Amino acid sequence: MAAAPLRSGLLRQTATCLRQSRATFSLGRHASTLAVLEQRDGKLNISSLASVSAAQKLGGSIHGFVAGSNIKGVAEELAKVEGLEKVIFVDNGAYDKGLPENWGPLLVENIKKGGYTHVLAGHSAFGKNLLPRVAALLDVQQISDITAIESEDTFVRPIYAGNAILTVQSADSPKIITVRGTAFQAGSTTGGSATLEEGADPKVESTTEWISEDLAKSDRPDLGSADKVVSGGRGLKSKEEFDRIMPPLADALGAAIGASRAAVDSGFADNSLQVGQTGKNVAPQLYLCAGISGAIQHLAGMKDSKVIAAINKDADAPIFQVADVGLVGDLFEKVPELTEKLKK
Image 1 (tube, rainbow, N blue to C red):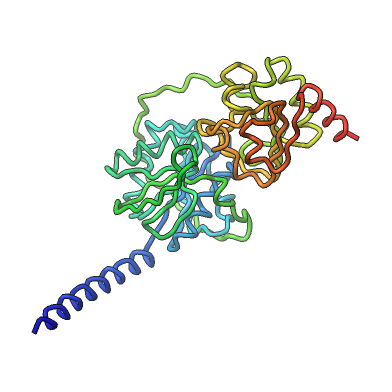
Image 2 (cartoon, rainbow, N blue to C red):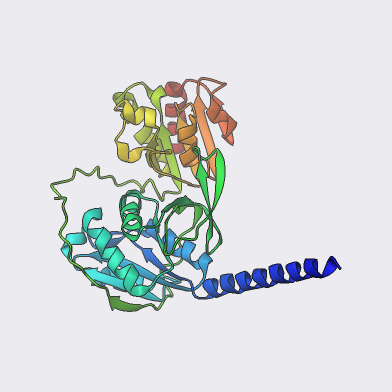
């Protein structure tokens, strides 16, 4: 007699699971993603294409979004990116500098118009500045710096400077997400055949005025996407020594230059060169660092590098625990010696 209610309960539970399963399948099949892409002075930021690569793991349709002055050329370039079905563009010079005060309403307008389930952008200065405002305007919670996608509602992200990995499940719609560029390799920029569409422009005036910028220009590879990176730390002792030792090594390797937060805070290097939790995340084929002890915040930004080589006079420095190759010695002797050998 007691078995019948139990079976009935199990049947109800099974039916509920089946309904949930069908709902999940339906959502996956109808997922649509807007990838917010970056450009500067009419040139596409290739690293921002990681958001397209991440969107491909979600399935469903993928649209790219770009805005700025004379943007049609960038949109046509994006139309060739593999994986994009449509490129939405807004031609307005007010969006050139990526100010979140006017970009926020712009994105919200186009997200609502397109009915997107997911909105992705790179975890760059642009994405980190813009998407929290968009999430607030849409009354949803942002999911930051994801490194993997398990399903259309479940994502993986590092916390505590990468010491722990958190799996996040979200019921929000749309889902506002920033993507770690080193975790999703940018796909091909050729072979695509996306259509172009002019987006909605609410023309909201920004409460912030752009005054000026002072950019550090370099002929070396971009730090965020370079195959080789040489990085200096506080062990270099001064800006003069940093400038004397690190650039020749970078030139000999054809590498980008990075720095630890300690070196940046000490004034040895510009903050645009900072690698770490509060700087840039890099994952080059070779990461060669000198005078960096290996604080946890620095490791969070470079531990995905394919080969890590370290030079430090302290044999017990934490950097040697993650390094594939280590050299214990005085960097003021070893780095110039290495540079000379590389030149030959």
